[in-house]
Image (cartoon, rainbow, N blue to C red; front, side, top):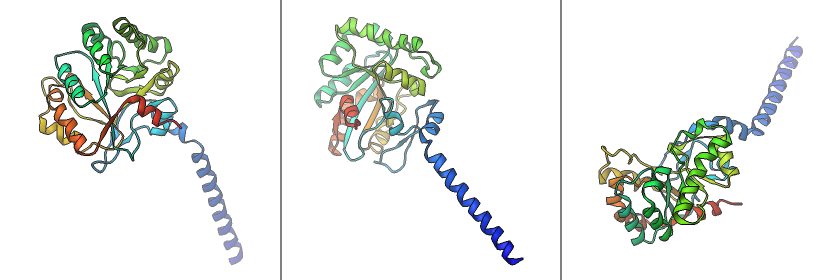
Length: 271
């Protein structure tokens, strides 16, 4: 009787072990499917840990890379990739460009159709001073709700056409989804159009015109959370950003950082 019970226990134990091995193998072979499902329609988000360390995105760098999408650079290089979102012009951009020129920093400005319509001279200045002008869509919609290529391309190509009319050259193909809202289909469509999708690894609430952060509030986020490989998102409409940028760049430089371009970011992430 004892022998029978022990044999039964051994059989159950073996069954559990086999099931565990099969289950582990199953999940190990489907990481991309799991991540893809989780990122199928979402808002870009970050999780911060220790100050000065890289945050984690709600989609991994490895997952994004398969669509030529990026949010962060190398963890062992003190490089900052500075970007600005530009939905409209309110007089702050010239001071921002002045500070960038003073520090010999090349940034990227993600512009919408309205900006191209109203501020062609600033677009020309950005280009002449070596900055990237990126595609932030024509009307700034929730792109995660756009699932067909025709509608997606319409938003993108309208910006391309306006840019070429102003500058006489083709736009460099860097795309940022408005408000960070995207779907996996969006990433695929941008990639098919030759675009690299650029998210970010550091930003702060700087876009409310009637509630601009103080200098101290800005520094509390932008200095403590800066990290190697940071893709920094600022808004060119921010009065605070225009006022602090010269000093902010000096402080980052004093921390041992240098500034890279999005072209450098994307090329450094290639195999």
